[in-house]
Image (cartoon, rainbow, N blue to C red; front, top):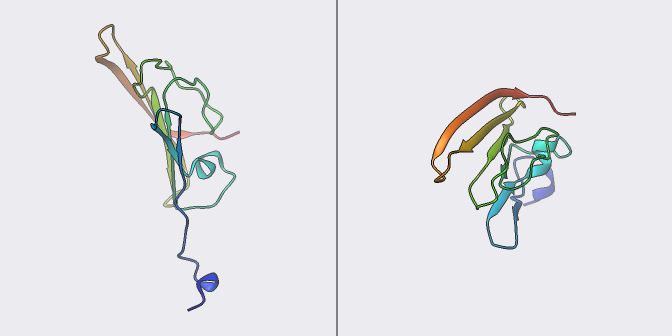
Length: 102
């Protein structure tokens, strides 16, 4: 079987930080530099994302500050920001249906 001619094969790329926390799945697809079916980035302590946007409130305590994902269905980035109150309880969550990529 010649797998090079089959277009349904894809790779699965995960990114991690030194603590073993996952930071993304196929982040290049979210950034617009690669062609896949799905990509996602989890933002912890970084304000900027690979998509060229910013997370509202970076979290320096291991909590997720936001998520950006994109699927091949419509090829549009979607973003969810999270901010937390004093005792790390969720305070608000915002959702952006379409995020512009620079």
